[in-house]
Amino acid sequence: MARISEETINEIKLRNDIEDVVNAYLPLKRAGSNYVGLCPFHSEKTPSFTVFPANGSFYCFGCGAGGDVISFIRRAENLDYPGAVEFLARRAGITLVLDDRDAAQQKKRRRTLEMNREAAAFFHACLNDPALGAAGMAYLRDKRKLSMALIRHFGLGFAPDAFGRLTDFLRKKGYQDYEMADAFLCGVSRQTGRNFDYFRNRVIFPIIDVTGDVVAFGGRVMDDSVPKYLNTSDTPAFKKSRTLFALNFAKKCCAEQMILCEGYMDVIALHGAGFENAVATLGTAITPEHARLMKRYTKSVIISYDADEAGQRAADKAFRQLGAVGLEARVLRMNGAKDPDEYIRSFGADAFRRLLEGAFRLEGILRNNDITTTDGKVKALEALENVIAAAPSAARREIYIGIVSETLAIGADMIRRDVEKKIRSSDRAQKRAESERIILASQGVGDRVNVDFIKNPQAAACEEKILGILLLHPEYLTKALRENAAPPPEIFFTAFGRKIYEQMLSYQGENFDISRLGESLTVEEVDRLTELRMRREALTDNTEALLSSLLETLRGATRKKELSTEELIRQKREAAQKKKNQSSP
Ligand SMILES: [Zn+2]
Image (tube, rainbow, N blue to C red; front, side, top):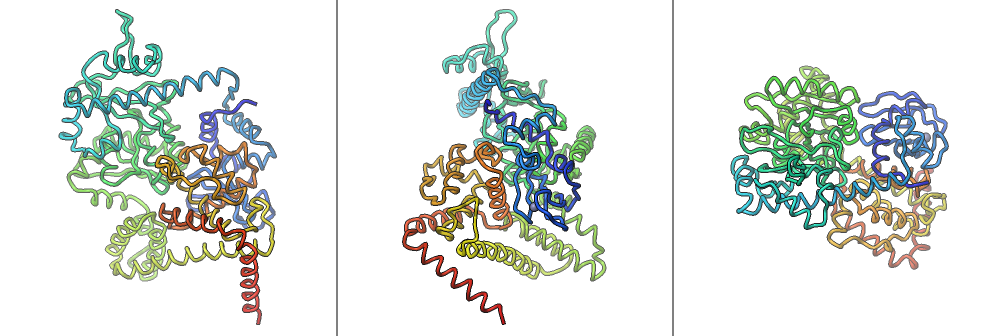
């Protein structure tokens, strides 16, 4: 069987919402932003089978089955990987094309993407060239007040006011005229039949997809001429209705919440002010495909459209679209500014942050509890502290603490102490679970997935922590590869760890996704990876610093493994024995 393209797999996953698929096998009940039900893979009376729509995965806390929608079908229908993919394709009405045409299309797509990358570099160089890009720079830096760092971060560019500069540039790079036209970079003159640059005298916003490819461009005029925006039409590499501007950055920090804006400039201003979870559609109204795409990355969306009537009408429409796919959505109402960009410039990033906070969870909790009564206040505080403890960064926790302290009139120090206690106890529970596993393994309780675990439980546990962090943050590996600092696979001593790590390397980290490995992994192995990722997800400390210290530990442990394995097992056995003696009277 021919290899199924990544694009097709993504499409299939996008069109098969995991909760819908699972719901056909077992009735699911909503539990917060997740769903629970009785596990179909082991016998149970209370539901421990959980579906996480936010990242399209499931996990059973009873038997450890887990994975994405494809691995669910593999197990539920007892199919192999291609079979499960075909099953889901049929369910969503997608035709799988697996012949040579597919390969030719792939090739064309790759070539378009390479050409786009060249074009993006060209536009960016023009912007930085005073002879060509002064007008663009005056607009972006001086008029819109974007920092040079922000301009570089988004790779913004400028298309010179000329007809053939890009065309000439791409010809020199070996691209054919028809390829440029197909990619929507050039038009073909009806009179002369010659190519001409499609984007002229415009600032350029490259559109980068979640895998890091430049898929399209948006070009904006610098005055009031029309059309204000010119966008790439659909090409072999790009579908407008399912691409979001800045999702490549936002995907890393939007698990809780995403901000949906109307335009590129809003998104850039928000990222510049520290709101890196902001995205925008590409000059179109939001489509159901956009909504489904967002649902893969986040639980809730704040719609932050222009304050004028047209903007608010569009916001209400977006609200309905997002609700239809089960996303929690709010419309942000701004006073005193026409859009988020202007709001931040007039009132500052903190004020905007408070606006967002107010729009969401904290406010929800406060509304659902009567904080004029002692009882209600205690309940609200408890719930709020849980939210704060789960916040992804210390800075964000501090902001939340400030808001709660002010609203409930309770000292910030007291709340801070409570929150720290909650974080510590959740970290402790995780560590306990890990060390119990080491003890079990050392007593020979089998690990069928990671069969080498027992040979050096401590090093193996360290390996699994490393894999867990990399599954959660594949970009760490991408960065290490770029800096030539990625550790060699040999430092993994279990065959399981080495195999997974090698796969991650072959996907260069960033593009890695458990489901991509479906073809080479058993469902049990997918279970284990899901578990490893979940275990890390529950912890607050998944930094690059921790990763490198774990790698250091692993290097040390692997070096002396021959000496210490026996000794380790003996020690663990003794510890377990001692524990047993202590607990018996
Ligand atoms: Zn189960």
